[in-house]
Length: 185
Image (cartoon, rainbow, N blue to C red; front, top):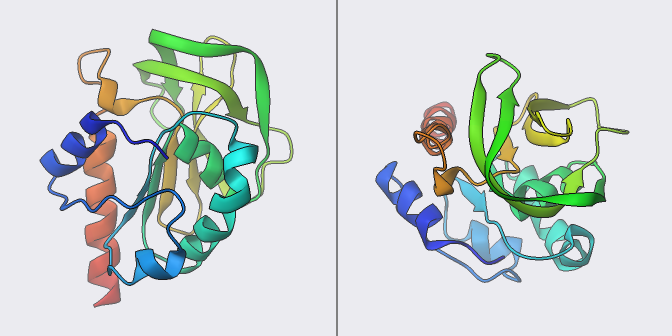
């Protein structure tokens, strides 16, 4: 949807071999590449508009059981594909130094943000768990599927605004792929 070069660099540094496909690539084409994992990138715009062509593909990718990680627009689209709603924010999040709380640990991460839409807490499907929230306005900053190897983040871990607080999520994605691959073998 418009991936940043540093996301690709972080995935490569975490041990991934990366293949980039255009936003309108079909699920069949993506799955024919036999990926160990699927990354949904950031990008500009309204997730509802992008979702018109992206959501059917993402739903097929979810059904494949392959691990999926989404960032920013990828987070919003993944949330929508899993049954969540998105909403336009009264004031978007822009810039660095946005404190985000990781709910499992209570740890506060300093993140970089650049979005005007958010996944809504209202009507969140039961199989989705909020993993991160903004300490500015309590908006959803991360989700995890309770039974599938899927997680996503609103902020930009590749931006590294703090002391590399959020780069661990690329390594977590790699571990998720290794675990999934071992189970499938």
